[in-house]
Image (cartoon, rainbow, N blue to C red; front, side):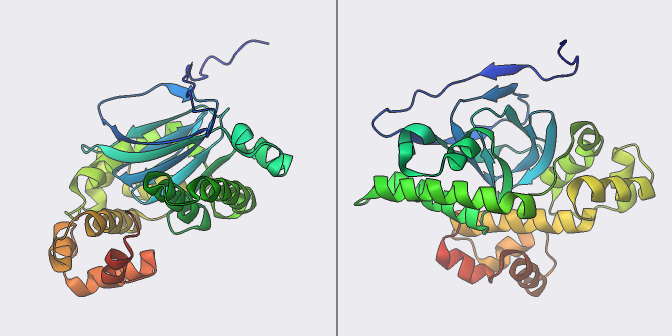
Amino acid sequence: MQKRANAPKVRVEPWRLDPSFPVHVLDWRQDPARRPLHHVHGAIEFAWCRSGSGIFMLEERAEPFAAGEVFVIGGSIAHAAHSVSAEVSDWTFAFIDATALLGGRCDPLLLEAAASARGHFRCDDPVGLAIVALVDEFRRRRSCWRDVIRARVIEVLVAAHRLAPRRSRALRSLAKLRILEPALAWIGASYASTPSMASLARRCGLSQSQFRRVFAAQCGSSPREYLLAHRVAVAAGLLATTDRAIADIALAVGFPSLSSFNRQFLRRQGCSPRVWRERGSLG
């Protein structure tokens, strides 16, 4: 059987994990000018986007990503992340050899999921919360941290297996997302401004009605809702990593008033900006 002409080239990048405890966590900064090839690691990967936005490609399909979202990627799934804004995107990755780590301690279906899982979640989903907690345990290495990480890996695999069909957004075609890339790039670089629908549509070479329809189908929301979500995501990162005043952050990301910022933040994050900062939810 001939290979499809448009199949992406795949590079094999195996991780040499410590056989005594095959888990590794690292931070990575994705340059928007770099277009990485699809690659596989042979180990399940948990990818946590801490800042930036772009398109995450899973085999021949893709979907938008933004700060505060996580991906669960099986060891046999070819993937690549592309930043589409003028800014870099910052990631934390966890690589796990689930078979070596868990052995016969879990259902074989979970080990199968570790090879073929494809999921996209928010950091406040059960999957996202478990991944953030896993990273924290790996870095702090408190008492019994290895056992806690094993439990978190099982938790992620179980939650991803159960929740992915309901909570993971449907993957979209890369070709259609490419049409929207000029608008997504503008939002990523100039989110503090408020563009007109006509200007965004014009950047993509579409009429306003076509732009609204394609954007909703590919991004799962209207352009306005996507812009507001991006502002909140950027603000969440600033709240967690700086001591800037909340009112200053609200204005910096494009909200006209502190009250409108508080309202949108509560709607999307489930708590006030002050509570979010106190929790250290992204740290």
